[in-house]
Structures are given as structure tokens and as C-alpha cells.
Image 1 (cartoon, one colour):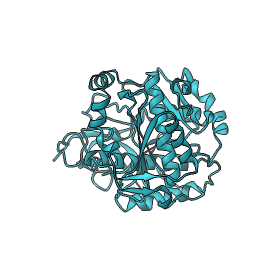
Image 2 (cartoon, rainbow, N blue to C red):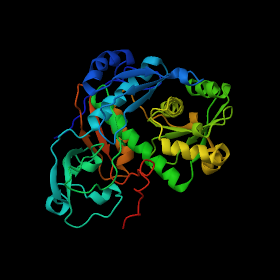
Image 3 (cartoon, rainbow, N blue to C red):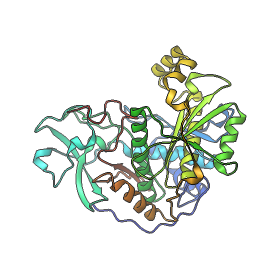
Length: 391
């Protein structure tokens, strides 16, 4: 396989950067819902008092171990609906569907053909001469084809009874887009986001508090939260790249519901878009919690036992004081084209990683990719995968 990018101009800039307006994307993806097993698309905005548009998609035929509910958010209802439906498409596409996988040891393939599995931060030691499944990927840094453990590609990963998983699979770096360039960019930004979140949580340090001026789209949403008694604590995480990752921790001072002590995060070359993504993700998390479809019942029971005050203490780093930086002081690295954004992002990530791998998982007319950056942290999603834990 090989991967080359076209010069794709951005056409839509309201709260996000896309190559098509949400209404155009909706026309394309609505006919795909039956094909991928979606049985309902529901507007769940009314479940919360905020009024920030949120949608939920139900796909009961999802593979065992995969989520059946998919959530979406946005500045407007169509944006939120498209967000949820595109998530359903990417999750459907990320499931193993009889794809070709090689079955071999790393020693048999060699370092020229395959990625060393230990570069992926494993949850258990890899035995010498242990056979695992491999899938093809394209390395954007070195412009070459390479085999990568399939465990890092598919979710849920199906080992077919032939090997033991190296770790529990997840959706980190799985993204869809109107075009391939859009999908690759958003997948890569998600990997950067999860790395920054993982490092922040491991260090129990959220970085710098982020202050926002008196006008603009970020201020508008912050004021909306404040008008409903929800305190938002914005943080600029200390990532390993110059791409801003912004986290928003929410404290509902009206209900004092411990399950609504939620956090959202966003990574984007534009600090404003990163902040908007973090803030709307808070709304999405609240709506999902209030709907109940994506709630882990065991975790919910634990949160209820712990209570509001103790939950705030446990997550004290979200709410403590810290050094402030103004959002207007952060450089905006975004360009007018998706391929140029990818180039900028690769310059940042490539300074910290030897490889940036892309697997094409497209199953429909909507491009879906998995981006893997060996060495970037993932413990935000999988507490068993901590750097240095496995020797």
C-alpha cells in the first residue's frame, strides 16, 4: 500500500474545520446507516438544561466488546447529528471483518518489514518467538510500507483463538472524514490528545490554566455554562508537541451530581477549535450520562457510593489553582488546507516519534483510518499500558 495526499481546501469553519458543510455530509451518510446496522438516531439535547446540541446513535449489531451507542456534539443540531453518525461509521469500519492478517513472529519478519511490538507500550511481556497477527500500514514519516500488530489496528481485536492479545484494543486514533486527508488529520490529532491526557493524568498535573477573553465563540459557551451554574476549569495540557491540547473540567454546582463531574478534551492546530471541542465534549459527556446508554453501571455505582465531595477531592488536579496563560497568546498553526495541516502536525509529532503509521480501514464511501504513533502514551484509555511498566 501507499498513501499520497491531495491539496484539499477547507470549506467549513463554524466550530470545526471540514471539507464539506454538515448538511452536505448528512446527505451522503444518511443512506449508509442501514448498511452499518444503525437503528436509531436520536436528538438528546433536551436531556440536559444546557441546550448544546447532542445526538446519540444506536447500533445494536456492534461486535462483542464494542460500544453500541455512539455520541456526537456540535455548535448546531446538524453538526451534532453528523458527528454521532460519523462516529458510528468509524466504529463499524474499525471492527475486524475477515481482513487479511499475517501470522508470524517479529523475529521472522525482521525490523525492516515490521514494527517492534514493544514500541507500542504493551500490557504484558512479549515472549521471544511469539506469533502475533500483523496488518499493513503506511509510515508517513519514512514513506514506506510496514507491518504493525493487528491488535493495534482493529477494535475489538479478534485474535481468532491463535494468539493472546498484547493489550485490550481501543479506538485511539480511529477517525473518519469526508475525505482521506480529513480522516488522517483528525486521527493523528486524537493520538496527540490521548498522549497529552495520559501524561497529565500520570503526573497528576493538568499544565496551565487557560484564560479566555471577553468575546468570541469560546467565551460564549463558557458564559452559557456559567449561566446554568456549571463551573468550567480550562487547562492547556503540557503535551510533547506544539499542538494545543485543551481540557475542560466541569463542576455542576447546582445538582452536585458526582457523575456529572466530567471532563472533555480537544486537540487542534487552532487553539479556538481545540477549546470548542473540549467544551462541547463536556456537553456530550453530560448528555450521555443523563441518557444512560453509554454508562458503565459498575462505575456509576462506585461514583454514587463515593459521592460528590470525595469525587472532587479524588480529581483535585482538575479544580486546583494554577499558572494562567491566555488563549489569545497561543499560536494558531492551522492552514486553509488539510494536507498542509497534516504536514504541520507531522513536523510536530515527527520531532518526538520515529514513525507515524496509517491503516486504511474504509468499508463505505466514507474514509476511515487508524493512526498509530509508537511511543505515544495511551494510559488515559488503558491503565495497563504505562511506559516502563513492562520490562
